[in-house]
Image (cartoon, rainbow, N blue to C red; front, side, top):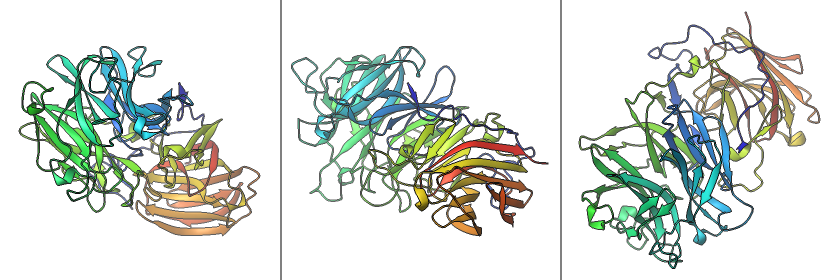
Length: 537
């Protein structure tokens, strides 16, 4: 089991919780986000899956890691995914060595199971596999099973047919696997299928086609009957003794990706006549948040709310660059899911009910905001902006690590920076008085002090969650062959920036009243070590 974001080995000399925080109903002072609030997107990624640990009550997140492994993370918060650990790494070659897609974590019979799709690097060879944990601990050892027999029959003479996005339906004491598959080898026509399970690692019955993939034009990859239908990403929604399948449809690479709904109206889920498709999509994109799909849902910590977790495209261009969103949802009078419209990136929301505010966390935990392939844990620190060796749907977003706990009002923060892009390195430095961090270059309300070797500058600026404003700059000599020490001292509204212990910038800013400390890069590759934070009088 390999950690990708744990034990950061920070030398945090002093970490004290500031007293007298703003109340949840108090307006933001000078641009700071009040406690008890957050903004989207909460993380980079696609096909998000989160569930509750029945023992601890914590949230467990499950993601594909670089299409070559599967990571899990544990968090008390539904808006911060926590420290990710790779629990299974694909082999270098073979039928399940590449294209690890859409893993789902399920707790069945006192063990954890991860259902996922994998191939040998050719999409047409995708099959469904399952990992089984050694114990009730999701971070114990894992054993691989599969591929599951997703062909026309479950006997050994019927080879599996292309399958992805497998999930588990539990109904009246029986279990069923539901997935997206091709109707025949090599067709590239995706439908929803179901089969009864003999165990969490084996199918019992032959597969059954649930429905057409093009009953409605909105299910097709593009508008018009000349385009093919495509159904995938089925997820089970059960409320008030009723069962639905929420599925993704259309083209995942286009802004028109959306959710449809199947309702179980009969007694036998293996009978296609027992399912009824709703005539309209139940969740679709807007001009601001598009390409929405592959959802899951989970209750708030106190069980009073239900939250919808989904991915959305980073832009309107055809591609698979995506980020994860979280927003509350409702349950209709008949028990069906009511999703509303997708939230806009940067819009302020209240934290899920019953969730501890980060200001009450006494441990110096940090959260990462950026593409997972641009982060690397190193000895005594962490590297941001690392170029992926084999990038998968990657994008730059001003990668940052931010403490979940608020800093004292008066503090000094210092860090040692190593630049890896030579004299052409761009900005790397400290975020402070930071609130509302999210995925995006300026997706935080914060001050930033950074070093820019490319231009020989110390820079100071402020972000409002959407844009950057430069406040001050000073020329300095930056020897990229040596680590550089950057220090920020904040007392009230007076701030000073030091480079290698020499004063570079003095400034007064009253726009941001409080917030956390973090580190950030802008389109560059840098390692941060020896981060120190101490309270000032």
